[in-house]
Image 1 (cartoon, rainbow, N blue to C red):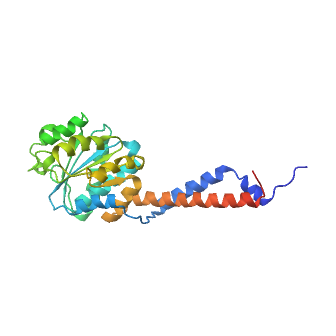
Image 2 (image 1 turned 135 degrees about the vertical axis):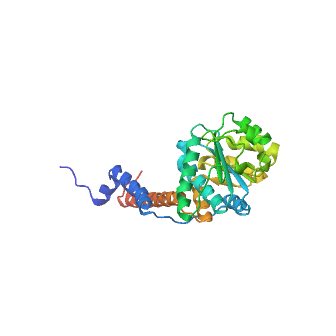
Image 3 (image 1 turned 60 degrees about the vertical axis):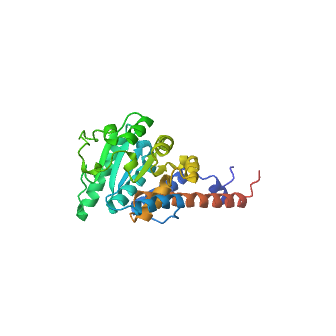
Length: 281
């Protein structure tokens, strides 16, 4: 007759699907409840925030969205956080992308800003407050061309409107005339901006990237070739907290933290039950 399992044996042989359910709940509940915790602010993120915060109303910031929907979870929240901060500071936003699928994400972000700021009595007008140049073909050659003549490099915007007479470009002839440039990248475009942009045209460059790529850009940060770095979802959450707009970044970090806490707890409990069951290697 089969010996009946005691309760410690039953726990150590628990169906792993129960763990999957717990992990799912640890993610879903904080997101549905709208829980947003707080994060420690890193110096590299604060540098980007402080530089934008010190700009004067009417100054221009170029925010380049070099990513596609595959990296949207990490880079789109920092895009929105940067847009909100610039709009709050009454700065002009110039955006484009060197990734084919990035143009629609850029336009979607601006459409979201229009909906958010309309109830506040702020109308965000294309060509006046912002411009989306859309997808630009050519990689590093785009940076070189924009550094020489921005209007010639990007003669039309995302919707095909001529950029030649746009008020937002008054006084801006090249990248040298832009007060700040930020590249949000899922690939290697930050390298292009450093090599073909900063080194040639001597503007101030900030960067944002996925968490897995952040470490490779710290040499640029240490040498001053970029003045700040926003890394992954945590970086986005930090920027949201600084800008006073807690949104997807902080919500995602709260869900992530709850899962980490759950996993740590399960490791401790599982090991405790393992030794209580008297099993040995």
